[in-house]
Picture 1 (cartoon, rainbow, N blue to C red):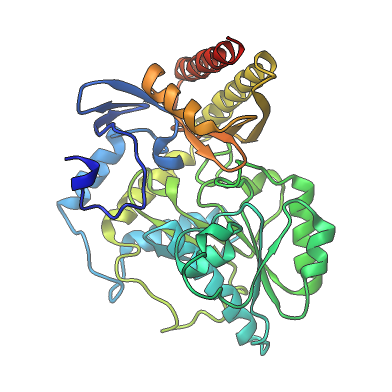
Picture 2 (tube, rainbow, N blue to C red):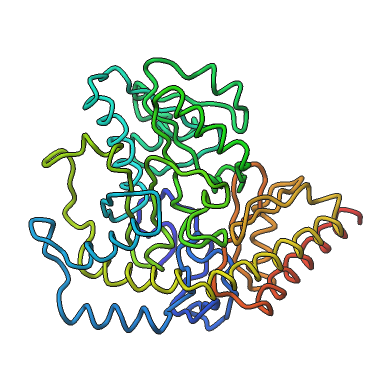
Length: 398
């Protein structure tokens, strides 16, 4: 079917490949061509395609029970929430279907906290330039891209944007109506930029001093992506609320927001809900994913290949100084900031070298491969990027 005949709402611009099968870090299109997948569904397929242990888990659960809604207790929710809270700052968990829903819940929780404390005027959510928190109306208002709110009517009240990484500028925006600050410890869409540990510590102190809540959006940076379960763990800083999704389901749609008991004090019976969130299928997968991610040997592997990827990308920067500005990100969420538009480079890497990568803002080529990618596969991916950049330079010099 041609693009003109498609009945899909035309909000995407995918390439011509149609993928039909995957195994590990590899994926095949309907023509039989094989590709090395280094974007993993945008940091979703933590264990690559069709990991046997998740196929087994999902198949077994599918033969038992799919859906009951949250009218009834779901055993898997209790089990996974106990694991999340056991190993994190949080006391309570709410399960969702997506990162956007997790963000919505986090924002509502922050405002409800202040209302419960007798300060309903504290509604302002401060986000950051370059941020991305999802596509719902509240999420795009919290995000730092004006293009996401154009044409959708007036902006929602109570959403403010701060410069990225400038603590002094942020302090000037904080006031008596500030409810929360929301930040991605590693920005995805905004150029794969990692907040410094010092900056995160500054945010925590500012929150403690002024009484607003600190929300971390770990939808993309969490679930082992940076070599720890959650990216903020590197800094020693803990949030009051955290939104997660993508990798926590290993490819199955699920998310959650986590909070301290204090931060969630306003979220009482009847103020929030979901029909599909935390369904038995998602919870079976979520438990299996968390158990695997929690193994020390697994995160050790992530750190090993992440170091290899980082060093290799730094090598590309050294070899192609006329094209590459910087290596950005953290762990296995990495960016290669270019001096040119990365979209044509992404296309050549895909079509000529059969390697899938992504792009992000600020002219960044984005890599978010499966967490169990091998050292040899990392080499293949970097070699492919290297070859395309070399060709690009040769063509520019001709």
